[in-house]
Length: 309
Image (cartoon, rainbow, N blue to C red; front, side, top):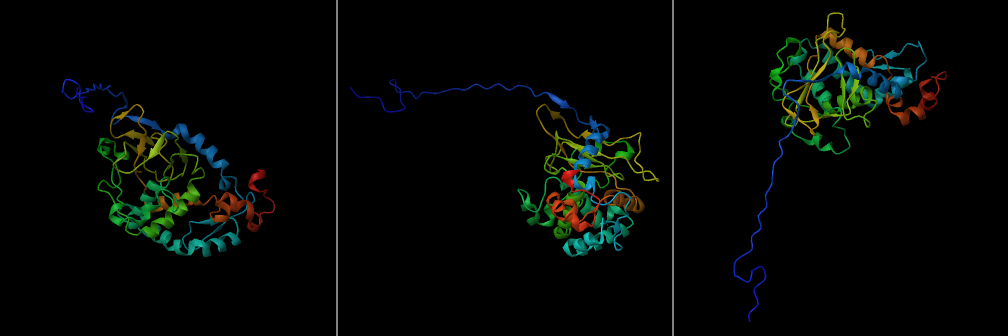
């Protein structure tokens, strides 16, 4: 008696297996246009993160005036030694970028302002060495900063986007230098937080552990920042808000795309001073390991090393 061939039943018919799948409707966590949160709640966390950073504790003596770069009038140092070190290290090339950026009248239309916006967009995700290092080898037209889909739902005038058509960074070398400065001075908890955002004019770092940072195609929310008043203070009645630009489902991560309003020339200059003027920005002070080794070089004999504060 002949045996049936493998895979063939004794009846000569091929066995078939049917699989039935069911789809469970996804629950919407945030509807399109809804406010996910405002940043007031996170200010305390931001202050705590700032105090824990090397720069936040500061290496300079209390009340001691900081040295300021006479070229860009943006970068401050706790001593002349730090300033000299930083000039040869990186600031010589960077100083002109800051001077050009501050001298341009219409920030939205300038190349430097566009470069700065992209630096803010990428501050958490990109570093020169790391999983995102391939970004620096992309052609310039692959680095577009575009308004997230659905952001036109924001109809309140103070929250309209600065550049609805998108902008392009053409010089990645310049961008990487700006990015290096931003990551060292604005993000004390770079490893600890999934995202840090900065309020216009006050440079308040806001750690949001549940919110990520993504490309345009991944974004599902936008950070809406109110405009700056003539006295350079944030509009207190309208805090920065994170708004969903599409329906966000339970289990899905909130992904921010970009920032909104950077104000006039004078406001940008004031914001720069707020961002940099309270800290020494040389690598000896901004890098924790370097700060420990070089505390004496900063001529701050009255200030204990960071580990003892």
